[in-house]
View (tube, rainbow, N blue to C red):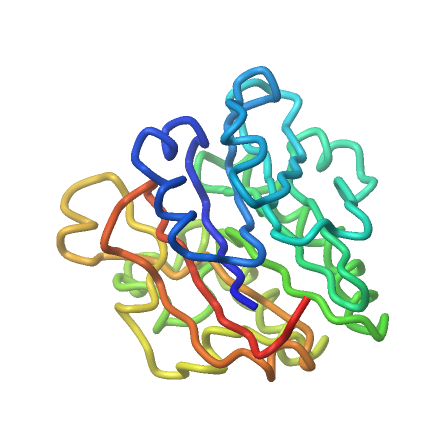
Length: 259
């Protein structure tokens, strides 16, 4: 089973940059999308249901903002849109596809980089999302939570870690929250399980400022975080950088698992 996670930074923009031709070449079973920046009327038929795939979306109420989606080869038994928390769901940040005993989630955590108000919203999201993560870890089902978590967990996960210790995305509170997921709840950072020492090759996002992409001054903020059973079946992972569809790069993980 191949699972891809990609923040599109606008589905229409990524489409113009060739993302659908690339996705067709990947033969992925599930593709998780974040930051659609679109609503239903904005999407072409190809965007809604690419050939051979079923498309599902959770849009933000605000136009041109946020939103998540999923494509899957196999039709899920159930689709769950949102967390049932009105202010979070208004921003289109969670969609879950249920395939028997496995759920695959496309998740988009808020960014706090624009100022104190959005950082407070990010902390509020984290606080309210944590009990859901604890519950799913205890549910007896397998989960893969794909997406842009907007947090670099460890120093190895961004180039300029010393200069970002007081910046959103690498704050001590954010990093401690991620550690709690792995050390207390028992969830698994799939890429890090496979490649504990990868640094620059693991980055998934680069600022549009300066020469960040050219110099690989990046951050690893896109993850596939999974329950232990399915995480143990991950056999390979990679970040695709040969083409650019967004300021993020696709994170690809292959699992020894059949839907």
